[in-house]
Every structure is written in C-alpha cells, then in structure tokens.
Image (cartoon, rainbow, N blue to C red):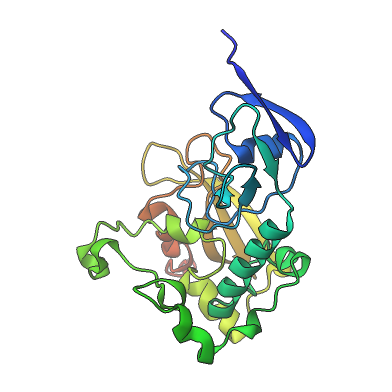
Length: 248
C-alpha cells in the first residue's frame, strides 16, 4: 500500500513528500541546500547544532529541519534573513572556539554566510559561558565521569562522524601539527576486517606506503560507517611486523 503524501510549500514552491518525512527530507527532494552539522542519515536526529534551522509560518521560533515533520499546508522559508542570521551566528560561535581548518565541508558555508569568527575572542567568552553552554561547552562523558568509568567502548565512531575536526585520530592530529599530513599524497585502499566474521568494510588511508588511519564507508550495508575498536585501531601490527630473515 502506498504511503500518504504531505503537500507543503518551500521557498514559494510546492513540495510533496511521504507522510512522516521531515522538512529536511522535503528540502532535499526539492534540491534546496540546507546545511547540517550534527545530522547523519544513519542516526536519529539529535537537534544540537541548530545549523539546519528554517522558518515556518506560524511558528515563533526557528525549527530544526532535520527533526521537524512535514505537515500539510506548511509554509517553509530556508533562506530568510532571520534564518541566515541564525546560521551565521552558529558558524561564528563554532569557529571562534574550534579550529575549523580541517573541516572542509564548513569552509564554503563560512564564506557563503560571511562569517567572521575572530569577532569573538577571549574577552567575549565569559558572556556565554553558562553551565557548560556556549564557550564553556566541552566534550565529556555521561554524568561527566572519567572516560575509563564511562560507557565508552573506544570504538572511535565519534571521531568518524565529527564534522568540525574537534575530534581527531591521534596520528592525524600529530601529523597535522608537524605539517606532514598531505591528503594530496594519500590514497584509500579498500579491504575487509579479519578480526571476526561480520565482514566489515575498511578503508585504509595510506600515505608514503604507511597506513595513517582506518575508516569505513557510510554507505556500506554492513557497517554504515561504524567500526569496533579492533577494526578502527587494531591495524598497527601490519606495519610493525619483524623483518623477514633472508635465507642463509
């Protein structure tokens, strides 16, 4: 049985999406670029970045397109002055506290919205530093307990999905600091993880014949971009094998 459809208007154009679809789904269907940061298709929307906000007629507040369901007769504005100003502020606040030089997907947005993160320096940080929000926000565990006492299993999936570069593999971090990380010289080699029978797909990031990190494609049917601690970090033995003895 075919699903019911919802008719709505986005930026003056009519749109039709299946019942239960989000405003972001409708925008994608219309080919309208709505920026996202915390959204990932394989995860449930968490509504924390506020970059995908849009304006909906009749709503006092801007709404997150990633989680707001499309409703019949809804009128959506994705590029209103209010929306663009909100996105600009989000990007500037983020850029003032996090080095975004490695976040390649954000560079075009910073330019498009005319962002100047340097407007917010140390002197302004106390204005929004309230109860772990704003400039006091930090990466932490549940209940703010030390990492060994948390539910973290060290899989590194948070590193894989981090859109800003705030979380990074240690090898990549060290090489970027010393200036030897060069993506132009890197290639990706696809293989299968041999630790168990699941058959996770691995992408080996190789530079100068050395593995620098391991990831997994988000579009893969088995992993959806996720790996366990062994699959993501248990590869160094490949480069630490003892030299082969030459026959006497």
